[in-house]
Image (cartoon, rainbow, N blue to C red; front, side, top):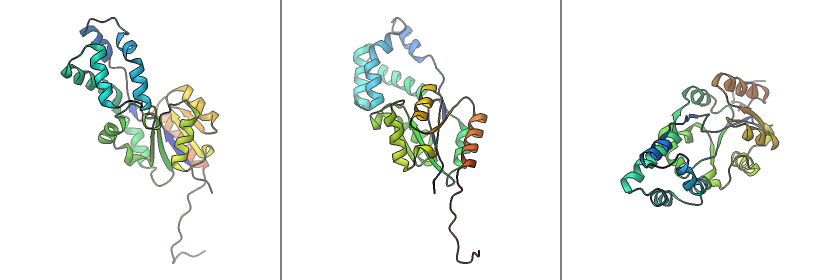
Amino acid sequence: MTEACVILDIGGVLEFTPDTGWVQRWEDRLELPHGTVHARMHDIWRAGSLGSIGEPEVRAQVGVRLGLDAPQVEAFMADLWTEYLGTPNDELIAYLRGLRGTCRLGILSNSFVGARERETSLYRFDELVEQIVYSHELGVEKPDPRAFDAVCAALGVRPEDCLFVDDVTVHVEAARARGMQAHLFEDNARTIARIAAHLDRAPLPRVARRPSDRT
């Protein structure tokens, strides 16, 4: 018997994370050409997404590379996290909450060091799904095949029994290449319909028979 499984991305799926323009505002404030922040911080952003540095080092490098004092670093990082965390996709989250116990549920997210603590505090994703695999903890990002292997291993499921939902086409294609079913998130209605179809095709969970039950 197989178990149906649904695995979702966070940013752009479980969280709405539009561009807030915070980087450009900092560049204007510091009188830097647009693009300077990402150019100077690119390797730090990368290291943070793979967990090879911690938050204290990120903050230190922000100060050094952008010439910010301690209060400015705190304000800069606050703006970063405001965009990163976005707002919750309440409709999809509520739907998934109703699925608990009927299928396996997991998250696979390209992330940044510090994300688990903040998303747990704000959104309680740890209570929504069984396993969360973050790139900054795994050391591997989507679309690397190892990311999909890791989340399936964490859940103890086969790729072919999983539906993966992401808002990035290359990630969806990579999941399919690993043998998973996959859906490109565009809106809640189509995503919920696709999840429902996936679960309808899956075997029903086995129900423990009580002593009073009769055949």
